[in-house]
Image 1 (cartoon, rainbow, N blue to C red):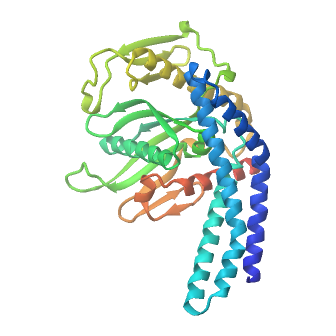
Image 2 (tube, rainbow, N blue to C red):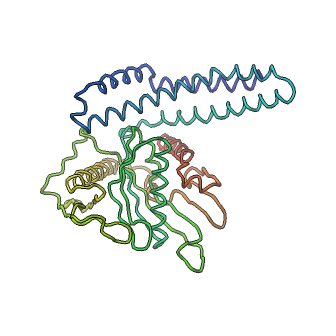
Image 3 (cartoon, rainbow, N blue to C red):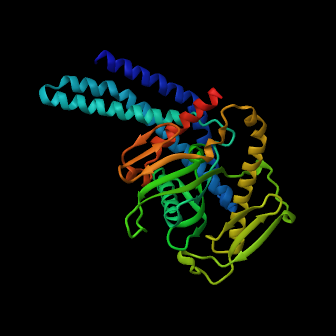
Length: 372
């Protein structure tokens, strides 16, 4: 085996050992065993919400262990692949070496992707994520863009086999949505998606302009950690106003015959949340309260950070500014304005191929935190 290949494999081994150490594989195995015992308890489903948390965590832990074990096996197989390739002759040898090089490159990408997961060590990074998307400047194009972004994140979640629960969709008059709120139900979803927070800009030929002019549209993405019982976010009934109304679909049409949609206004802060995607008023109120608690938790976190942020020369408010451009015309490119990571295939990105942007965003955030 060529010395450069040997050195590269040794470097991969070092990185993977670090990942295995940070993830604590033995502790992961112990946790899986514990969760499997809980899942086998016939009384578990007496509390459906707890049961879903247990099965979700078990599935994620098993998947994570499989991922690490698979990477370790692939790395151990690499020297054999090169030995077999070197044993070939002529064109067969060339083709086999190319296959071995391709597998080594793929292994690099997969190990680096797992390494990024070990960078998620923030207080709330392990949480599920609550994503809120709002259309910005750009009229009907912006509403359509907000819907495209929602589809992009749901497709990203589907690629990873993460469950998504849509709490509220406020449809715009002509096309698209004014806003949407949905939960991505997977461990570390918040830590992973939090780097997507900010303003997303779309440049394209407007499908709504009969003169075929280029249009720039904006949409805002907000990512919050789902509130857990340990957060102590109390919301007294005296501090909220609850309004009920009839759910509406695209074009403002009524989608049911009862006043099941719920709007909750938090009187002290003026925060308003809505939920209309559940079938009953009670379910919608429970979901809306979850969203309100998440927003209040984020508000509390922002207040706690305010003094520290005021002392920093490099203000962290850039999260709310323009952070990524999606250009469909006159050329094809998606570029992250913080990390400079870019791809020339917007169609793939809009179909959920976001991992490159997310990984570079997490690494960028880590560098910013170290520097700051």
